[in-house]
Image (cartoon, rainbow, N blue to C red; front, side, top):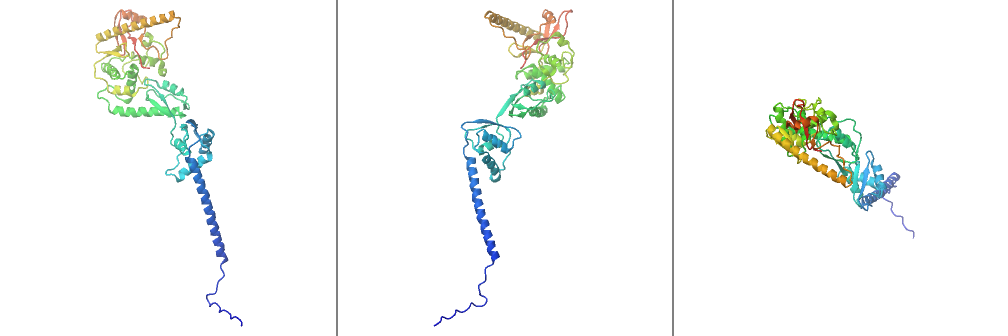
Length: 428
């Protein structure tokens, strides 16, 4: 028997040959997905490795100082950090920095120049945070009240942690003395700009709250007046009273007769005369010499601080017209010429005792074979009268001190009536 043939497939249901194009497309898609998966695995593994190394403790065994110069890019910074042993791999550092900006919660900030202290075992992330936030080591420069603009410039030039040249001297009285903090490499002109801005802000704030009926009419006159107060006393508890003396003299039409104005008229911004004031200095006709001019000088004689500015706007309520050194670093204030003359005599007695003690000490040093230490001339003489022929004559006559401790002599006819100075301790 022969097997029978199977019946044929019904029409319409016959098998179709698969499309070659579709098969090729499927193969391509499968390959792409496979490659994508492999790439994703590689990228994920790389990112994980970078972040793991990025967050791991660094190689530093102790804190270290690193200086990042201005203008260095991130790759140059990474090379510097790797060279100095702060990080292990520069490319991991750069990659972590870029990834931190891409996937982090905040955009990566620029790495800033400066001098930084990196703590021991700091991770790359911590190093980047330190550089990006500008947490550099801060230096400070203290510029005391009473310096001239030229003296301030010289101090900034001598500061080794500042950079750049200063090509011009700022106007006198335009800088606010204070302590200023800065990062290594900060431009010197930047410090001057900060001092100017601080002075402008302080003047704007203080001027609005000034006492009424002051004999000054502008901010410029305020700075000039405060600069004289600043140079006359270094004691906070005396500034308002010194300001009152000068205001009282202005209201009465008396000359201020302030020694520091003589010095500024001679040496200007140099600030230091380097010797005692002589009779010819007192008689010298300069625009700043308040023994020879009425009212205020044409401009400030130094850069006053906030305390002097405040005192100039809020003087003490007194009738004092005179003051003279009391031998303790302060001054004796008086209203009348008679009381002032008495205070002058007491000051001269204190001065005489001080000279006697100094002479005895010098003699003891010489007897012991030690060379006497010469007095410093950096700031000029601090105490003691300027001894001139006219002053010797005035000692025999009835003498009186002017507003700043100067002697208004009523000497015989053969001596001058120009006031003679009694030196007082000045603020350094």
